Image 1 (cartoon, rainbow, N blue to C red):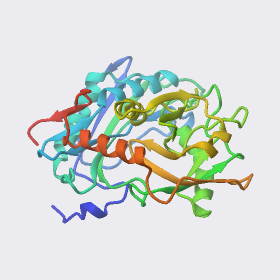
Image 2: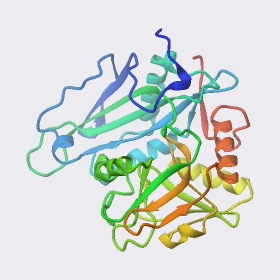
Image 3: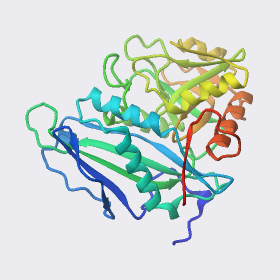
Image 4: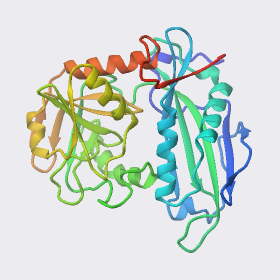
Length: 339
């Protein structure tokens, strides 16, 4: 195997040996196929290309302190993918097929699982899309389910260090009654231009407000937002916010660490009262936020140049569970035996 510098891996695409694929027609799924090709042959009239019938997931496998490989909360990813499929009228992937595909692709690419202690993990990307041809605006009759993997480092180049975020008011990520609550590509396409502008302005990510009133915090780019004050973990509740599996896990751990948890609308003015702030998701796990700058209002909110006390405790505890350093008393991890 090529000599991989595990500790210097970025979060990006890394070619591995195999991926797995499956076709769905008339409510039935065919057999899983193993492929070494990085390409897909797709009909030019496929609904994924024309009408956005596409959803994806992201989850990770970790090499633990005991050498075992652990998959983190895959059932929640399978559940969320089914919700996404339902939301845009795609054929749903059963949990059993989802897990079989994920387990198979991990085993096939076991040599790419980063060693324990490197800060890297194996990122797993399940993808579901309409492969059937339609010219009228209607759901496809055929679907394709693909899972590929690759070793990744931290999502933000800063790692677990505070990042700066630009709050924007002139772009919306998702409509109030649209697709913000499911993991479909259109939400991310809508975020690309403001995110690129934020990067050009010197920020790591972008923070959106609600599309209807511009009064409440929405998503933090590709992640959920949270704030901590008065020993309370606060995160937005909204139909446009994606239900993050990482955030759901953090809420549980926050209670374990003695915090209260509030999931509710978060007015933008509340940013001034937080002691800590952060973004959380599968890719970043937790990215502490050091500074938020409101681009239009020129208001700046500062949370320090080092990671906050509770953000650090939560991050370390979550990582310890994922890597087998502490007991997984919540049953979140699944050991993939024999690799």
